[in-house]
Length: 102
Image (cartoon, rainbow, N blue to C red):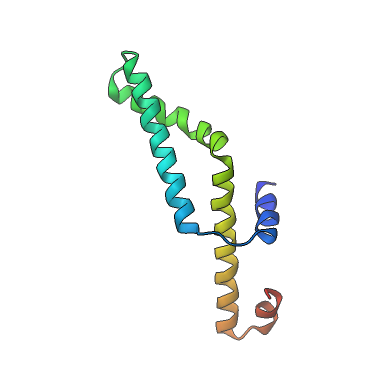
């Protein structure tokens, strides 16, 4: 279901700067991890335990909070995969696949 929605969005929207989106998503998730770790550690929990708990808490939280950015990354990956398949079809001389993409 999620894959079908991503493909539908990918067909309707232009390609984005995938490298920038992946880097941004990584940075904001790491920043969230550091913030949650710091908050838990300030409550008197040992740092290593706070970091472990933060990893578990931040995974689903970041999917909710940064859902739009996550969808942008997924859409960019779909565009990249389609473009790669189109190029492979052209290199094989498979006109049927290459023409379908245009």
